[in-house]
Image (cartoon, rainbow, N blue to C red):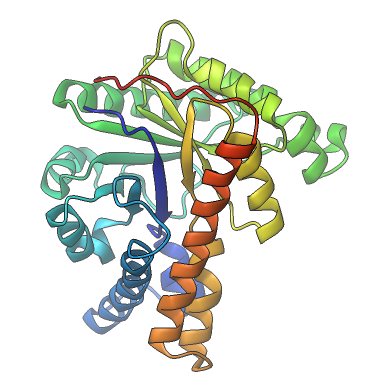
Length: 313
């Protein structure tokens, strides 16, 4: 597939958090429950489309939404020629497991998104058996997508082990001092296991130096077609801006995927009746536009940046 030069993604593929935390539903969901969640996601999509009229370049814009509640959204975005991504993992699970089990391939083909996204929590110093099971499944997925010529996006989360958290002295210290190195080890582990994503969706890093180090690992051993984007992790505005500004000068980082920090507040106000649907849509468009402007400005005013060449994988 052709690799985008820039990728500004609005992810709203969250399922478990929408069902249980936002709406307070209990399993199993009925048709009305499903419709209400789908409508909330349609509101987010409306904000995304509005931002394309002002701040976000159309050729860089992308959505990440699930098949369960966002099938019609994916179809509409595909029809508009926009970049799309759809998750393949079961939501709310600590271990990467296919949402549709052995039938995952049929769903990938039916959705026909630009990228198939797999979220995985992987710490190189974590449970070896857990890591083995996850990498086996991811290798199976990677191999399938490669044979089909489909884009593969890996959302890599590296949660701390208890001893690492204690050694670092807290989550913030772990994120700044230990996580970058562990991310490199995780990426290299995946590559040795034959897991070859097109896009690495990376937890934010505080320094451009660390972004370079992680990007070098992602592009290691001739993987010139691979790119990275920054995920938001539901962080506050100042932290997301710091992560975007750190990553933007690095050629391999071509954008971001910031979801809950974009839509959670507006969606909550709409649900509570303190904002109209139109107001929530405009707020989402505004946040998405802010991340886009921040990244573009950081590319222009940050360290010298040479864009990677256009490549086909």
